[in-house]
Image 1 (cartoon, one colour):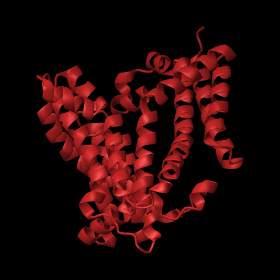
Image 2 (cartoon, rainbow, N blue to C red; image 1 turned 135 degrees about the vertical axis):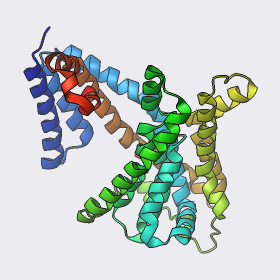
Image 3 (cartoon, helix red, strand yellow; image 1 turned 120 degrees about the horizontal axis):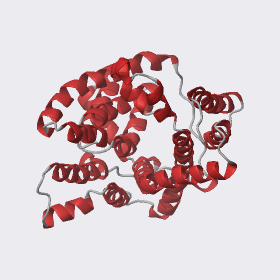
Image 4 (tube, rainbow, N blue to C red; image 1 turned 90 degrees about the vertical axis):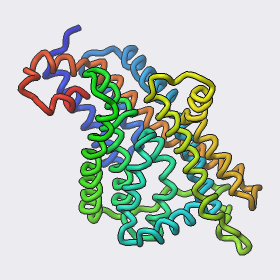
Length: 353
């Protein structure tokens, strides 16, 4: 069935408008807003209910198969590090090096370096605990710190191998990977600075809000760091649950850049460097650091699963909406209706539609 471009475009705008309207006006949970938007957009381009449901299931299932383990394990690391006092130790260490005034820039640089070898989503999850602790100790706005961290991670993710976009583009046009990495760093660093500066400027207009209340069982449990006889981990032990996953994923990325990546060493680190395995190692190290009050460990891990579940359904809803949008074929229609040569540098942005 051929749908004209104007109809597909209106369907896209209608879906986006529904999401914004339901979440802002009625405070509806984003998952349900995205689900409703799937039907609004799908029905607008004359997809049947059965077809819409099929695309929702495909999009939802595909993204969860890729991210569910990473998000659950990463969230578990964050909660364990928070409860055993590691995030405070790490934040204090960073503040000693940079001072409170430069903590936002420090987290952006940390994201930039971390993002060189590993994907931005894994890096954000691993570093989020440090980020939250810095927010509490410095008084910076959540938007300022979080966007600064994301700016560092995304700058290299979008421009440098071994990340998929840059790697695919380099392979298509036959670019030397070494030169691409060198030039990519030169270009990515100003991009990171721009993101950081924008976060500092625009974030001033925002305000911090309290997070969701803890579950009933967990709310009765004090952090280990609040107990009188609590001994916080050393700086090295506090950083290990973060550094070891980054190191393992980094080695796998380096091996992937080599043409000859066979052998026992490559096989071992290709396995250990898988984000799920690397983050699981981080969870184990975080548990080792939680050497006091282990009776609360089950509650901490249970809380991580609950928090990760809330994140996953939103991500899944977004992927479902994306699958319905892809079914409208608006990208192909746009390419046939517009002279892409005249679009120039905006073509990659329009292509992502």
